[in-house]
Length: 465
Image (cartoon, rainbow, N blue to C red; front, side):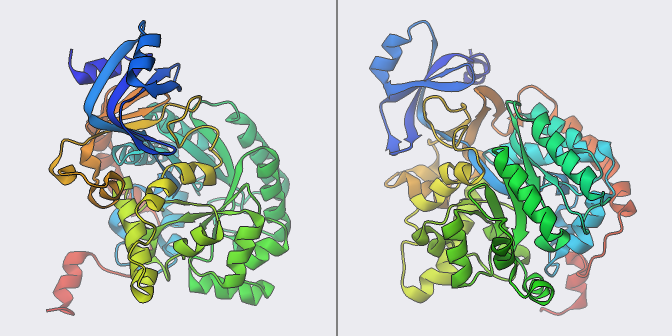
């Protein structure tokens, strides 16, 4: 029987990998039990194997078994746009994403979300936090796509009562929908509900406060994009006399249940607000590189004890490259100027892409670590590769040399979902063909406004020789 066949049929098994990434670091000579979708006993190989002799033993001497990565901020219904935003100036959500998402019907929401979920899993993400789709009432299609692929998902429901969605309901309807959303997925094994307001200015103070409180009382997270672009900070100052984070703090909308996306333009005072309120942050380095105004001071946040995880913001779904970008941007923005050669020491980025990401997403009791009782969401990484040979510091090597093509297997809830980049129980290539056939009309029918031409046209302009 091939290794793939063994993994597909080992719902209850003893895994004996060459290395395991445990909460206290990398370990060898460790075996772990996966039973009923969760991690069971973890300990020395001989002891665990002997006490679980009735279970299939899976020896993986050349592999690292590690927690699946968690994308703390993405947009599952933006995958059909992709390179439409390359080279575009900031606030592309106004000209590209809101028009695109608002034009998607139920079928296209489903296809977009399923494509995004596939990309997440291929990139080593076993969990993704979706910030909420602006399409009209198609959350169930998004959840169905995530469930079918096996991607654990925190699914946000946007509750704007001013602007920023395809349809802006009245206050009573928004609150009723929010309550229904929280209840609908309260016990789902893979889908976790969340409430969101796209940006603070898209909702009234009363709605911001109400939705944040509702999420916190339900044990869910409240999401919003804050302090990402200079123009948004200035609009907030004009409208409220306060910067966006200051405004949220003033109205009582921050807290340990809140996940703030970006926080790139933050003052020392606002950093203190994040720390003192125990609010979490999604550090999205690639969003800064591709279309942002600044880089979040993640090292400063870590030093202050501000909780944060790493997010893609829908840029590219490759967890290893995300960690590399997270470290690189801190080195470029802070480390070079201060002579800090460690910039997190490698381990910080691996931690905030797994354990710290789970904590920021409200899922610390569900996933993010190889720990008894947690969901068996994990990766098998092939270490028999040139990039890991010789290996002197595997954590640093994962951050700087890791790639998604080194991932042999992706598991969520103890089930094999992908083998060497492709699903084991559904036809991904048929999905790709269906999307290619449908996407041209979808993009053409969306009122998208692009500023920058495509790469070939830009080259013809002759600005660079």
